[in-house]
Length: 292
Length: 344
Image (cartoon, rainbow over all chains, first blue to last red; front, side, top):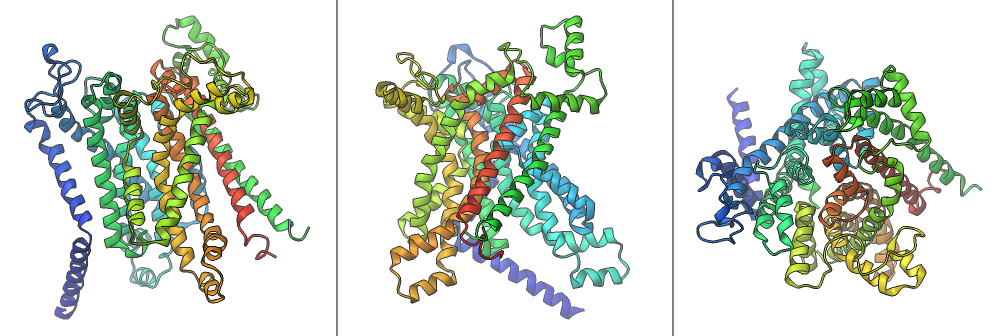
């Protein structure tokens, strides 16, 4: 008993060492973790820390360039751009986290069923996924939001639907290669039900590659949601959201008021960049062979 | 005949595989037109409709019939090229889309050519000189490129090249108003103007095209460069390259004749994904640059709740994408040196 626990301890510590080693060898991943912490911090505490009310207008102070008072300047109705950019973090992150969670759960369930039992559910699922992937994904998201109605919830559903195939395919492949593995047969012989074996013995093996996918996907989900609100879907005007702020600022770029569009765009870019770096870093930790 | 038959069979098989996908696409777009919350007839009749015109729309669209019958009516309409009536323009959606499609294709294709022209050499250079500045440049571009929101890059480029430097024309459409539109032959301004021999207009069209095409190219460049680099690295480390080296072939022959040709195959497959991104990003770029293509048409239609136009756009984009994927796969079969030999 003590022997096995020692062995387990040794294994986790070597995994931990490996992680530390990767982080030391790749400082970019460390920076990405730092930026990620900053994003989470501004999403959680941002709204209570910003210097101005993101919705308070002040016509006498409109279109001011960045200054010590207003770090990112003010917009056409005198709202503080810095406060709006920080406050928007919560909404943008919530949309993408909700969408990715939804596609993670639905994709996992569908992928498990198709990968474990095969047969006609597998065929139907594959046909269905092929059909979704046959659309240019952003265009499909546009169509879904247009069809379901123009609300934030539908932005989340649309983003979840277009991301779902990636998870379902990944889980299906990971489950499929293990459904006849020795440890699975042993678990079944020991009297575990199919569902239990699937959920507790096979599915956890799919988690590491799924985590990489989640991180890469979060960045893409943010881009997608911001793109949808840029063309006027989902989030409606007074709300602070990066995509819609860039869209509003775009009208002023040709007359030189760059700060309206550039700062929210920059923040959006940093957020996406963080998740992409994080995904690449996680992939190095989880599966060093896939490095390109 | 012996040499062509496996290739032919692969082609026929691939075309047959596209059929269920098209059926699926049609089913999904049918569901999208009928999934509107509440009464679809109200939506399709428009904002200003009264009870009578709603009832007219319902009968005209066959919404009073059972769902399955509606579906067959929908398919019948589609096979005649009828995508419904646009409320905002008053013309048929198919007509509107056909008129604006060349503008979108001109933008997407020139952006893609630009991206391939930069990304493929960059990827090859990065793979042949690992660890040098080219390799690092490639890595930075690849990571930054996928993180850039296209609409933001577009606005940034407008600010720099139009407002600050004043070298770009105003970002409004395909041609400045001082030029006359070239005669309509293909709908591609660059080709039409060249056919007329009107180089003044041609230059004007190019000047308008450069910024939006670069915006889109920056976005599509990243996956192509990444894949080229990875595929070249795999090809260069494979056994047949070692054999070729041992046989004393020149490094040029090895690189271009053997490694590059094999590396092209995975790059071709990623082009499908790249097209998916490019067609989506196209919508955003068209909005930023007021480009009169089908993307900005769909965005305008969304704003005024013109559902027939939006769903017609989604369906035609999907069909375009299926067709592009088919072409890519057929090209793949055409350039793959192994097909036709191994399957004998």
